[in-house]
Image (cartoon, rainbow, N blue to C red):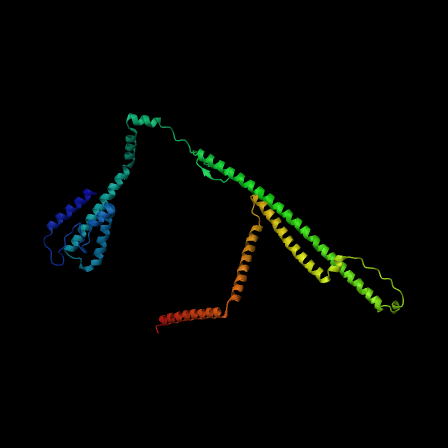
Length: 356
């Protein structure tokens, strides 16, 4: 490339020495450093793009510049263009031939390089013969607990991780087993509480029924004494059965029995809900011990969020009720002022867009 570049500069220099007659408009001689038409630096293309791309770019630039000059390309300027174009074409042809020769000589050069590589000193050859063949890479090992991968060579780290992971899994299994046991015990206790609360309800209902029967019997006896059903009962002797002495019935009333039944049923309903919750918790713990996600967990999260939202709204309503008239009027005033500010900003933007 350097030889071709130096040869082209010498040719252009000799042609410059022969062209001494030129006029005012055509006073530019061909030079590799500048274009005869636009005075662009052509040598810069060779430096930037090398011999192959540089001469191709110079040819394209000269054609483009000649077309741009148009009819003004006459006389010595046209000869300069022709000489530079011919020089660029010759250089491109020489580079193509050199490239083809290198390509044809490539197999021979590769064979020579291979032979030179084999012809090494005796100590390097002996060292190469002593070098053992690289064994095939062993597959990576995985942890049986968490499926973490380790290199086959890193047996120590793998064993430490496996021991730690196994111990952690055993501790977790033991904890889940205790959780299952505790939740099951709590569920049984909740069921026993439901059974215990069911007895007061039945007792209160029995007292209510006995009291209602006693009231009906007393009313019937009064009707018989007054003779509303049978007028002859006034003259005849009627035997009245003595009521058994029941201090509980004497102390309680129908309204009191109803109130006690209502309270007992409310407590029983709460105990039933608690027992259902405990039972579901025991099922969730059992599923977690088996490594399965229970579907009730999602519903519980939804219910907890809804409960928190209801509590927030209730607190907000309570806070709104506690506000005084002055605070409410101040809030309304601030709200109206903010609204007026927004409207004023929107009006100013509209006027700015319309140009008024």
